[in-house]
Amino acid sequence: MSPKQITCFEELKQYEGKHIGDSGYLKITQEMINKFAEATLDFQWIHTDPERAAIESPFKSTIAHGYLTISVLPYLWSQIAYVSNVKIMVNYGIEKLKFGEPVKVNDEVRAVVRVISVLNLRGITKSQMHITLEIKNSAKPAYTGEIVFLYHFND
View 1 (tube, rainbow, N blue to C red):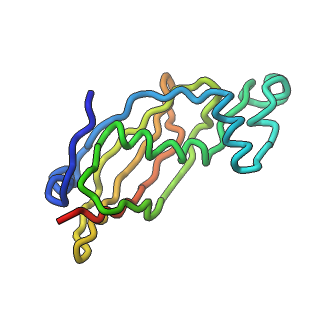
View 2: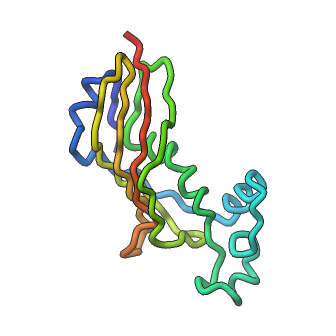
């Protein structure tokens, strides 16, 4: 499925209060986890030591950093909506974020997005989205929360 094309405030506003879409699934690999550990200097064994995690972890495998699962949101969002005709886009905030289930190595995740609100702030579009990060074949999501983007569309 192709992402929805959004080029202005009015096009985004039409999704207010509605489910806008689901991304495809993304597999979280040990290589991704290790690279994230390197980038953030977070080498806790539960993320980076598969042998120890298999024995000592209650999950019997390594798990992704919570912040890694958040950091893939822009990629997953781009599969749902292609927002173009912008001078600048800013990741403005994350609200009400609650982790529900760890993402184990080789789990597949996807974003399910509902548009909560779209406001025009003197030419800047503020969009608030409810995000659920689902784990394939899991009853519980990895997390739920609200993400806020600011878009400055070209005239």
